[in-house]
Length: 336
Image (cartoon, rainbow, N blue to C red; front, side, top):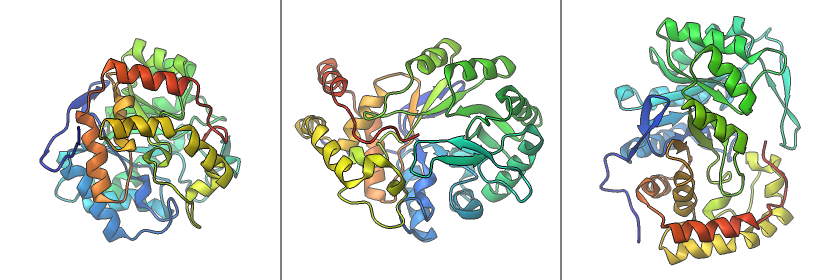
């Protein structure tokens, strides 16, 4: 079943707490330098427009992707005149203006922690900066990038609720939170979507999934291709590639993981799918309200990835994959 998307102008739709978007969105982080090596804006714009042409209507970015708001600015420029064709999701609290105190947030990357600040007194300023960079009058889905360990999440959510009341934001999202944090935030203001890492090589937190389903909150799966690993094409990680900070991509772990995921690639070959298409189709089958956001810089790969929204895997294939994944231990720990 060879799947392409060249003729498609739309993809199947899914709901994120009332926000209707394509079943697969596009993660734009890869379009800024310093993520997966160097890239120029012309190439980045071509990739983004390829995603829109292939039917992606959810574009995911953040104020901290790229230097000094680069990713949001690139999206704003590329989508000029086409803004109403997409829903733009962005995240805040990671690009800290001068004078804003950094609050350490521990992560599993080699550098150990990130600096965030989600104090409600800064939230409107973050949003106004993102609106300027994006060249738009509203943000469709707005997330605190990480829960600030020094600020109650409910206070941050209250500040976003004010932006929704004022028409600057349409829907509230949460990113990288626990089930308890989701419940607490949802009690302050309805949460449309929760963004979490979820892929074949990183199971989502079952308690978070249960809470989202109970509350009617959509799920946005970041890194649905395991930072590119699940494409089956990562043979090396070059200088300037962010994955050098990820233990899973160290040479010895990368080789071990390639060996361990060979059976999954074998199933993809049987079905005449790319490994990436199989990984995305599998994820879409896990929940009717999950929207993965794969990213790529190559238009042909973007078309292939998004075509996975039209793949329906049989229960027999899903059972085989479940059996493989249940006994596959990933070398190198977690990504976050």
